[in-house]
Image (cartoon, rainbow, N blue to C red; front, side, top):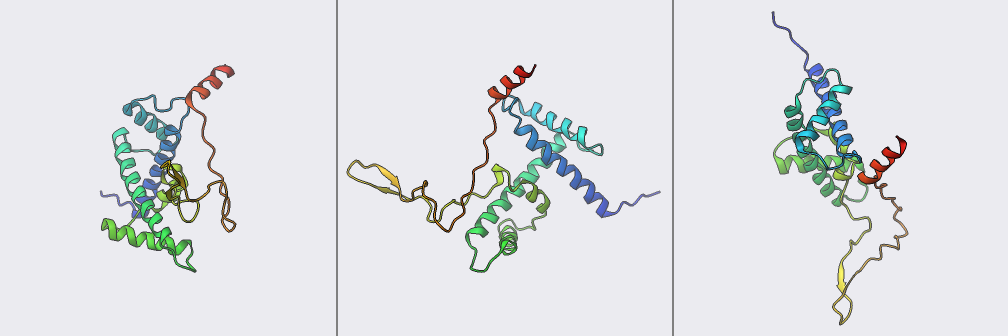
Length: 188
């Protein structure tokens, strides 16, 4: 007897596992207590444990999680680059949908395949690693020679925001591992 499972249910299951994998990677990689003081084997076993703990349907093992993450990360990073490129080429009257459409075209042209990780990109795009690398002020920060001292200075003053640009707060930097460990010991 052959059991047929609908393609939608298979994709849904994969998306739930991918969503859990992304969440696990973000939580484990930004853990201030452990930080980078762990081997890759330990890192990936922690990610797998996290996935199994919060997703009862998890079917992937440690190696499969690692391979799937690399595939997701590569595609999302490539698309983020295409999105940045599309953002730099916006025209008057363009909106976010136009930028995304152009990014899809650029991805297809550059990598010869369709981008199929939109849900993943939407989940990761606001994280520091995949965030847009566009300059915060128009004109960039060109360096020019100032005087005979051969010193350089920036042509744009970062302390003076342009009048028509909104001021964007930078994300709060997480605590370091030493401070987190001290706080943990103080509580105990």
